Amino acid sequence: MKGVTVKQPGGAEQLDYREFPLPEPQAGELLIRVHAAAVNRTDIVTREGRMDYAKNPVLGVEVAGIVENANGHETFQKGDRVMGLVNGGGYAEYAVMPADRAMMIPEPFSFEQAAAIPEVFLTAYQTLYWIGKLQQKETVLIHAGASGVGTAAIQLAKQYTGATVIVTAGSEEKLNYCKNLGADVAINYKEQSFNEEVKKATNGQGADLILDFIGASYWEKNMESIKTDGRWVLIGVLSGRNIENMNLFQLMAKRVQLTGTLLTPRSDAYKAELTKDFSEAIFPYFQEKKVAPIVDKVFSVTQASEAHRYMEDNKNIGKIVLQVP
Image (cartoon, one colour):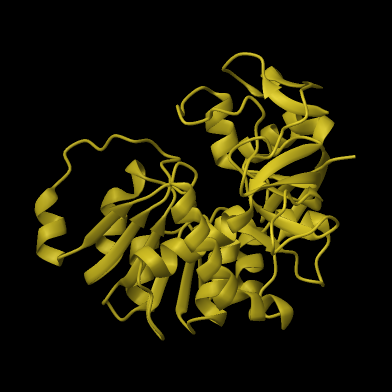
């Protein structure tokens, strides 16, 4: 089979589509004939050599395809349309997936749409509910609202929880898209001080929950934007990891709960339980078309380098998907 690997840590030009041995599923695993895989920031960080948990030489953490070998599993059989997280190996013609995190693809969705679900919707669900404890009618501030996780989080917060959703994004096109997905307040961070806009939108109280992909440069404004006793979940550090002259007393004075998280390096057991909980809670919303994956652009897997550059240029609204011929 063919798959995408990294010749050496570096830029998108280091991606190489070449031959690999067909993966062999072990007990409790499925062999998937991949029809589509999605691109994630995790893949870029792995390509650059900044993550040490990527053991599979083939990139990619989520796929959609058809079960080629169910390996004796009772729930799935050959020919089933499934999607889910894999431990690397997604950018390939075949991939191995733990059966306990495989999800049947909802009928309305193509393989390309299905590939856009697992990583971002599981991350959004985890950060909003398992970690962020978002409650009915609370207010959530979602940074990078037009990103894959952002578009998923907007829909879940609005449809599943009836939350007031405030988002930030960097263009009117992205802001309008976020509003169409259900965002109540959309802030252009390039033209407005989002902390001031959040205070206006919440009568000076601040947001109950913040989903933060940005990191260092947003520290002070996030601190001003969060409500006393608020929850703050750090999902990414796009603006940097280090904060100078950080005042920890601000956290104490507002009694802020700050939690950092990454999904990809979590244990197999954690991902399986998250997948089960998410499927039971959210799949009815997929079936009723209240929630849907957002696919921005589809590339061939042979164009993985172009897909990575597209993400690095922050051009996408929603997910970037690789189609596997």
